[in-house]
Structure formats: structure tokens, C-alpha cells
Length: 151
Length: 163
Image (cartoon, rainbow over the protein chains, first blue to last red):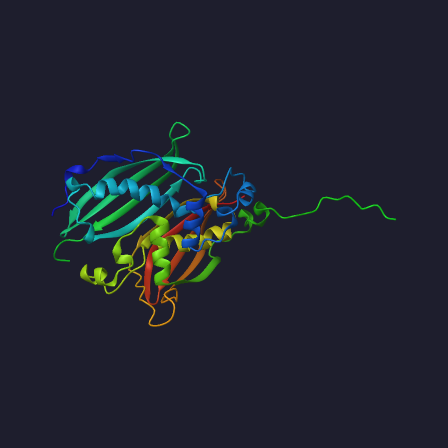
């Protein structure tokens, strides 16, 4: 299976916004050992001026990986998921995610190159506020490496 | 009989507990921690994140794809490290940018005996002030993360907005 380099520049949008719930934030905070009270208590979050509990910074990976999956698991992409290794991850926030947000997610295939039998793919997923004219919330940039058959 | 004296009770709010920009110093270590990881932690993260890739919970499958054993989600390591930074920052929304490279896998073996939530791997992290941007009100923390001898997260940075 060869990675399809013609998909550079393609984009994949979640069909419906991802709805951020308090429960999902609390569960994610617990799973990553995040003790900050602002993840659990709306009153603690209000001390910093937020409308509801605040998500940990890497929470954005939930909607962004869903959008990335639309690309990665698309048969056209030619990606053997059992050979995928996560290379890097970056989150750049315009504002933090809070409970009650509805986030649109569009994954852009920004970089796609092959070297030494491996393929390195860079995706950029833009999460925007579906309640507010798609105002930017966070940009998630991810690189994956698809290991070649010999590796 | 004395009238009760009315006074405002002082209660520090979250913002009062946040570190201040003016107190930061390049080169100073602001967070250091050892983070334990168990098989149960990997299963909990799979559930919370929606990342159910079996290399993070099924030994046979992990070996079949060429790994030594089950490995932690790279994003679990990153998230656990950032959790210590948000604790330091007080305001979780103060983290305006964070990034990392996954440089080596973190093998999380099944505990030989006892409960599956017995830790079998430890991440050692230290966050040092790398740069201070007074104009933007942002400090850049440079974070080292290792597991045993291996650096597992490389070039890890968090930019934190401070008042």
C-alpha cells in the first residue's frame, strides 16, 4: 500500500460540530492527572473569567483526531494505520476550550513527502466556534510517519 | 455586648495564586515531577480521548506490529506533562501554545503482580524558563521529559501568558 501524495492540500471537515461537555472535560482531566480545579468546578473557572469549566490544553486532540481520521482512514489516502507512528503535535490557542463549546473541525493535509521508504505527513486541523461564525479557537498541527514495509 | 465587626473576608482567588511575569527568571526550574504510568492509566486515557488503537492496551497486537510491548499514547505523555504546567499556571487557559516531538516510545508493561493500576513506567519532567516576552506577557517553558535513559518527548515547549 503506497501513500497517495496527490492528496496534499486536501481537507476533511467533521460533518457535525463536536459538542464539548463538562463530563468529557472532567474525564479527560482525570485520565491525564490534571488536578487544576478549573477543569472540574465552574466556580473555579469563573475566577479566571470563564463561562464554564476549562478543558486541559491537549483536550483539543479529541475533535482534531476525529477530523484527522477522516483523512487517515480514507481508502484513497493509502495509509496502513498499523504502520503509523505519531511524530509531533502542537496546539496554538486563540482562546481556551470551555464546556458548552460547539467546535467545527477541518483537517488540512499540509505536507506529504516520502523519504527512505517512509512517508511523513503533516496535518493542520482548525477548530472553530460553531456558535460564533467559526471564530478561531485552536490550531492543531500533527505529524505522522508511515513506516515503510522494510522498517 | 460587642457588635460583630463587619469586614470583608480575604479569600485568595485563583488569579492571585498564579505566578507573576515579573517574578520569572530565565534558567529557573519552575516545575519538576515524576509521573507514574500503569496499564490502567492507558485504558483510562483510551476511553477519555477516544484513541482506541490496540497498541496501547493489547500486548499481542503490539508485538505483531513490531513493538516490544504495549506503549503509552504519545498524547497521554504530553497531556500528563502539560497537566503539571497548568497546575503551576493556575489558569489552564493561560497555556497559549504547546508542542512536542515523540522521540521514543514509553513501554508500559503489565504489572507482574497485584492490581493492574500498579505503575510500571515513570516519566521524569522538568520545566525551565527558556524565554520571557515582557511585551506579550508570555513566558516560554522548555520542558525535558524522559523515561529511564530515554528522552521520550523532545523539544517540548509551553508558552504561558502571565499577568
